[in-house]
Amino acid sequence: MHRGKGMKFVGDSRVPANRKPNIPKDYSEFPGKTEAFWPNFLLKEWLVGAVFLIGYLSLTVAHEPPLEKIADPTDAGYTPLPDWYFLFLYQLLKYDFASGPYNVIGAFVIPGIAFGALLLAPFIDRGPERRPGKRPLATSFMLLGVAATIFLTWESVAYHDWEHQRSQGEIVAEVEVDTEAAGYAIYEEQGCISCHGENLEGGSAAPSLAGSGLKADEIADIAVNGKGNMPADLFQGTDEELEELAAYIEEVGAE
Image (cartoon, rainbow, N blue to C red; front, side, top):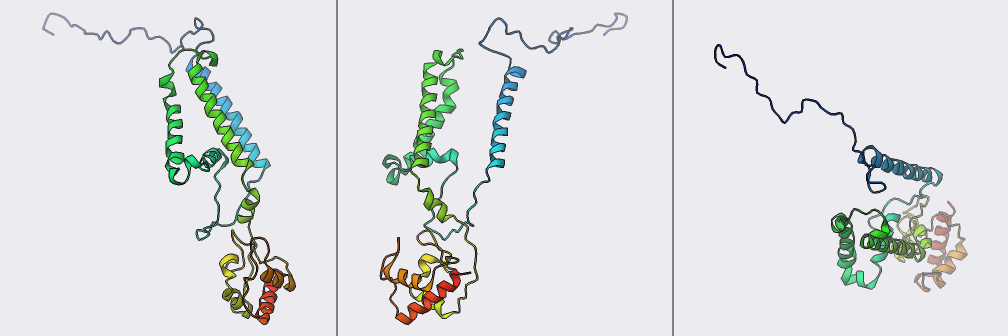
């Protein structure tokens, strides 16, 4: 600015003089092919998510989840079972080509390829069509993935030993065990403790003796002749020791 020449203003042409309101674009020229993300598409996603969330909450209220006993890291015979949404991967690890020496294939390679393909799907199929019939590649891979997941989950549920699963995680009432008793010394000496536990609580290979309700003659017969997974002739003591052990287990089993 110079004296006597007045004042000059410089304007920035990038700033519009008349600002337009934030109105979504008109998609009427593309009927059935696209829509505004906000609020149309996002509102539909929220509504579907709310329906599933309410459904899951109703199931958790109607069906109390089963509880198991406190986790025991020393129990090497316990067979863990994943939640339902991982059962298909659990079943995959049972096949010969994905287990044993090929465990890496079942645990990392096959799931990595499947989930990697899912992540790359938007980049592989970039067509504007939304109808499944017009997108054969994406539709085929999606149907294959859903069918494989349903089949593996069904196989895992149908052929799993649920009776053993419930028994090994069953909550057993704790009883006071007299470790100073003569019967408990025989219990240790004869190796019963290795299967039935220090507190007669049982394990993955043997049932609990605490609260079993067995009589002394039944216990003596099982100790000599075996029962179920327990082989015969495991007891190697005298008749007096057998009577002492049976009486002790009967007393604990009655509590």
